[in-house]
Image: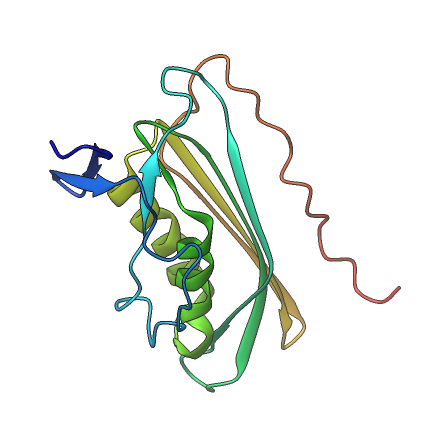
Length: 166
């Protein structure tokens, strides 16, 4: 293995990745679609430790596949890392690539969680998609990879249920 590199699982094969992230510190364009987005992973700085990482995206957007109107959500992604952690700028670019992507709330939320889980291979992952109402109905979508590891501290995701204007 080259110096300054580590082995990280991506999909069903092990790949060698450099310790230098692909996007961090670089000018980076927003990918045109989630399929074109590259998720970058770096070595877990605390291998063997049981801990949770949380990403919150309170201004996530995608498009309704029927009307083409924008849909807005507050996403919360929690995971207990394995060998790798997702690099935050790569995740930001990946989430931003949904801005012009048409998909139902359920497909978008679960698809994000499954892609992260399949590529990163964390010990455990969950995602909460708290979608703002359109047509008067808020939709909340939740997915997790399975039961959390014993002993993992799981704080509440901290997003209050939608209460309207009153």
